[in-house]
Length: 465
Image (cartoon, rainbow, N blue to C red; front, side, top):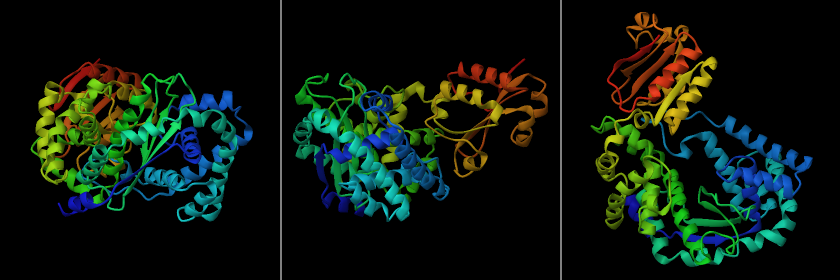
């Protein structure tokens, strides 16, 4: 409550812009596949309109290599009660976002070089700044001739940032315990390289939000509605950034509340918590359910966001945070809105370790396509880092030997071509073994499992011959 009150009293200053340098950073990060963007459209734009060159390739490769090296050298992630649903938990992703945010905090490649010297070596800072300088020179003519005119609707964004929406953002930051030093928010409008683009992407990097736009006279949305659309999506994405910035101890406290809940599927509800809160904030801003406004095409997120709206609105009105009893209400409302969709394998396995040997990778892809887990890890060591995390083991009978203690009937089950077996792992997590004599047998087990809708009881689910 003290932290929330401090945040409610703190200023949250919004800046809307359509600057050339921010556009350059967006292009580089998009081409490097380091942010969410319409990658194929940017790659086609650079290849066909700007005539991609060997120098472009060399500068982009250098940028990617330095960032990738920093991600690799980041410390190992620490243990947690659940598989965390926020980016800053993962050290490699945290480093990547730091580099991009450092570039966005600068107004030029030279200023970025000075700022980046606090994060990477002086040589790497010079190389990264050189890449940004190169791409700015390459993009400048197009920006002056075409790009600048495509983002003239930035004034509509400024007008749509009403005092009520700014106040909502401030209260959302307080609700999720956003970092106290997060006081400035930047909303960058970037010109889509494709005027027929109907796939524009909004994404946040720390306290920076990007939105791709097409010219108002070619957009599907009327020009007067563009600013409202950008701010609406911006509030959603910035809520993710606020949530991401919360102190580690707050995140651990929230995870523990889910673990301590009497709801057996509480970890799955936690998996969608970040998205549910952001969706709820956007629904409050738009004053209509996000699913009805053409939002997420997802089986769970729009409904869980809608379920969270009254809880978050009440908490904001009373100066409370997500730590103050929100979890119990979210679980209760979430079960009510999802109804029979709660007790399904797809929901139960929304966060899971997926462990398999190399020959089983085709079966792993088949499993991912069928069940679409939102967060996964892929090694036994990672699995055991988290207190309550399901595991799906896709194994041939030789690899299955190491799990004999978990599957007491293993020797009998191996007389079949393949089998699926489910058992409890800890208080709220389960171990699902999908095993067979060879990879094709395991693939057949996955295909059979995909036809099942409800969560089966522990034990042998089925065998195949």
